[in-house]
Image 1 (tube, one colour):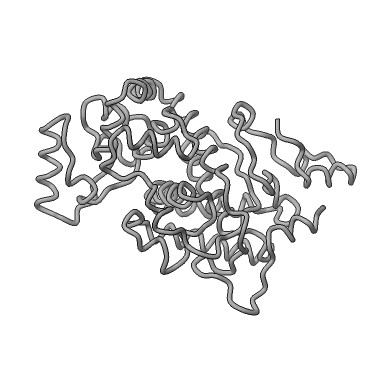
Image 2 (cartoon, rainbow, N blue to C red):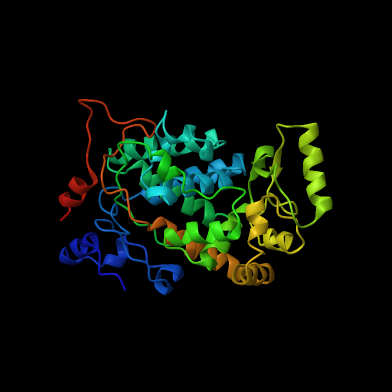
Length: 337
């Protein structure tokens, strides 16, 4: 079990029960051993921004009520930010990696949601919470509001000063990856085959452009033909990745794969390796198992090293300018040491 956080120790020394101010570990956090990145803690903002969780929760809940697409939008934004180099909000910077082909189609309303939450949080607490932390917390809230288990989020990250490089963004898995490429790409970032299949389950919600499945081949020729015909009539069509229950976070994505109704080549690739196919079948037959493992694998993604160098942006879309007030995460932490 991770050592008691410094903020909790401060409360203890003050003669207060740490549990009165800090949330108890979730089931996911108690049963999954993932190293906490250096300098981060689960209650980093417990003293400096006591209402942080509620502010993020209310904003995400309201956004989802207005637009169900916020859930897949946050999941994609979070994955594309964290997977290349750790969760550092580099993807939010204007004129950077968002313009790279791998990041095409990021939902503008989700980007604006993160900035809106930052503005609310900074008005309440000052510039003490990074855009990286807000993105991490907002994604967890979207998952929990989709009826999945919660998980610990390491907090105290700083916002990157620069976008990720083309080489770093280039490791993101593509829609035409075969199973060997998927397994190798995920393994290089510390994920096993179970994580690969579980995280692919995010495709139970969301959409893909016609270009993403232009080369779809293999299983279920009738289904592939239908996809091609729809795009031939409307090249700008956005295809639901889950063709059965596209607006519900459930395990039907895996049932679709079992009958060759995965939209992307990379989706169907999961059925072409003995071990990944086994996990497809497991999650298809047990939604609770999928939900639990999805949250566990998202927790691993949230714990990827990175986000320890930079600043706390006063606007998520650009670096702080000369003369702007900047409070670095390390300085905030030291204030409560």
